[in-house]
Image (cartoon, rainbow, N blue to C red; front, side, top):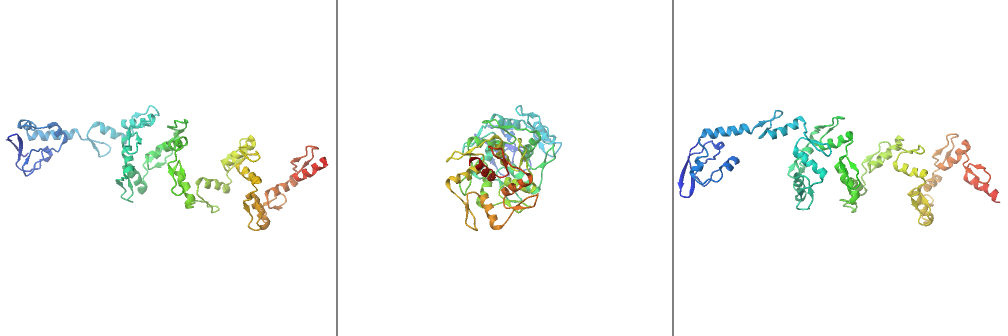
Length: 442
């Protein structure tokens, strides 16, 4: 080791450095020029141990000999180097090594007493418990929003600064959080490292796996404090809570309409763009909503998922079943403000109100006749086209409308649903009953 001479220059401590040698690692950085009033230490811990030096005796007592210093550093390196037996990482303490090993073994020794979730690190358990307590100790100085985790606050602050320091080397996309970049890269590699032990399905993100596993366990850890409803995913709870708060944070830039969920906003935007991404391969019809597309497909498959518990009749749409049930309950929710008549369906009320208003919005392009209901217009058009869609399975006769077919079929079945209350005689058609009643009244 290069020798260091101490000279008393009044009140000033000076170091005359003889020559630079490769002894930087031993604690003293030595240069080729005279350095006064300065001792530079590479190891911060040694710097703290040395403290403020005021005389030669203090400095002389630090290193007794080069051999001792060298041996001390080697001992420190041995004590602070704990290699992982599973990978090549090294750790400065046994506790950090043990914490890291849990990643390889999958051990999760820390368990939440509220929901039973397990964690590999105690700090993760403490952070998780805030989901139950609602504690959010970290607050944003810009907007006041609070967070349960310090790292979440740090990432949130980037929404104000616009900072996205993590960039994808494949496509150039930038991210505000390194974890988001790591997950994004899997879209390029196709990597899905997280596997479901129940069904074997693989996922690129651990959170997606956790959400998926609740399908098997039925776990719903997120509870609404307003109504008590429980959810398997936190995002579902957050969306649900907007029902109670009335919050609609997602706004359409074209018309200003607001929505509680971003998915609803995206669907709404298709009204302006005309986008219809769902295509029926059977008939070529396109749809802007997946739900509408799924309902439409049942026309081709004949699938009727919804069955009436009273009469067994089945329907392809839940809404149709709910409307049908009113036949059994007698419920009539929709009332006419002009005459007070009630209806079980909104469409029936709307058609009825045209009797009072005289409105006939549906016009025939061939003859100009107008109709209050679209169904009546479609029926009328068959006069011009000669189309007869409905045929009798007994005799093969064709009819332009369903009502005429049903009347005709009573010839074959002998059905006479219209009964005279005066004499008990039955008739197949309502006009026949009305004509008969005149014989009683004169």
